[in-house]
Amino acid sequence: MELSKEEKLMFEGVRGEGARKAMEILVALAEIYNAERMIEVKSAQIAGVSYRNLGDAGLEFLEEWAAQGAKVRVPSTLNPAGMDLRNWRILGFPEGFAEKQLRIIKAYEKMGVDPTCTCTPYLAGNLPRFGDHIAWSESSAVSFANSVIGARTNREGGPSALAAAVAGRTPLYGLHLDENRLADFIVEVRCPLKSLSDFGALGYLVGKKISGGVPFFRGVKKPSTDRLKALGAAMAASGSVALFHVDGVTPEAQKKNMLSENAKVLVIDDLSGGYDALNSQGEVIDFVALGCPHASIDEIEVIADLLRGKRVKSTLWITTSSAVKDLAEKRGLLNMIEESGAHVVADTCMIVAPIEELGFKKMATNAAKAAFYAPSHCKTDVRFGSLEKCINAAVSGRWE
Ligand code: F3S
Image (tube, rainbow, N blue to C red; front, side, top):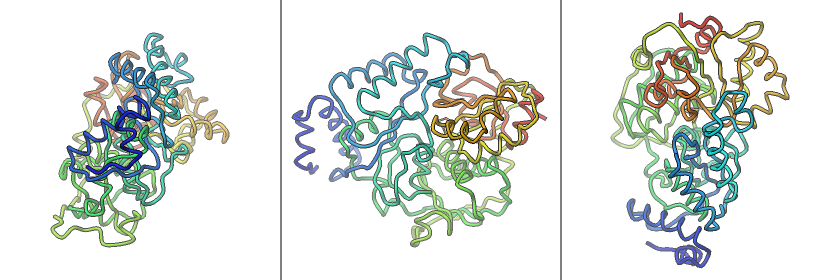
């Protein structure tokens, strides 16, 4: 492949061992995907942060890379960590876990990464523009950036996103190229979509059917960005979908014809299959998890309103970025939520935190992505339904 002068200097180690290692990863990727050259990226979002997922081997890998002098060249943020970085003690996270988690964050900081740990970086200061090439790795953020913002990223792994951040480049292939951004499925939605969980159920069903494809939705009326984020997260979880278009809504679908010639048609006229697939049995709920992907300030406002004058019986987490949590505090929403006994938890989420160690066994959520992963990742039973049902479950301790 063709490398620029600066890329050659990095590849040959002239810019230090940290940059050499980054280029080694990127060149290997370019060879796998037949990329002819690199393209400069504007930002990175790096997964592989929770100690629960990384373990000691991952921690040592990061500390070694940092010690080799790797430094990021573009603004870079992190995916959720395994705990709330400020309030982990109050929330009951084990001391040993916290010590390792903080070492991971320190290694990233040493490389110049902003320790903002969120799957919605676009709500916390890492906001790309239409057409920007970026290297992001969290699947729901990749989907949002590609689809709702119109930026361009492949679904990076943790090491490849970090390598792109250090080199300031990524191989030019996949969703960075126009021809790969056309839809190969037309999804006709012929049922009402009334809630965030309906968008999640729709995303789950579509992802299952088109695995890895690019859908073009018709019949989705003026969805809010929060609903689009729920839709994309669910499709990314059930079918590795990294890009979708919504007729007349998402930016690329507004600018030109995004349908490929042989696009197949898929009709969705009932969401019950999605709800059935994502629900286990059982009425008792000990943990309610909202904010997957991390909650926006609008979502927090709605939740605060629903909790007004109530007291929760089960543990209720609303997960978000520390930036949005700070904003919620300024607006008085944090106080309202905490008065009910619920917690706004920053920097982590119900899937990457060590939920088993915290003792939760029966989770309720309004997020299809969390419902999809909870049984396998957290070993919990899960109930999936509307926000109102989840708030009721938190208050009564039961799924009714
Ligand atoms: Fe984000 Fe965790 Fe959901 S990373 S998308 S809140 S599973």
